[in-house]
Length: 117
Image (cartoon, rainbow, N blue to C red):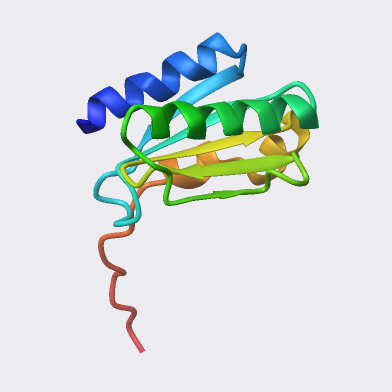
């Protein structure tokens, strides 16, 4: 499956399950871990778990088995690693606390200016 198809599958799944505040972060060039991070909110711990489990199931069904899933027991923050796409599903209070959108949209430091001694 191509990267853009995988991203579309994830977004369609999030929309089908009524995830809220879906944000796609293009992190190519900022990390070698993944190309896209998709962040979404669930309305309860059960909703967060259901969204993450369904994303993992549909990806696997489409031939893209997740590299890993985390946080499915607690349900405050779940992560599904699909290699080129990493999906974070969180409760709104957890999402506000970690603010991944701000973290990954910060400018990349290219070099520090030399300071005079």
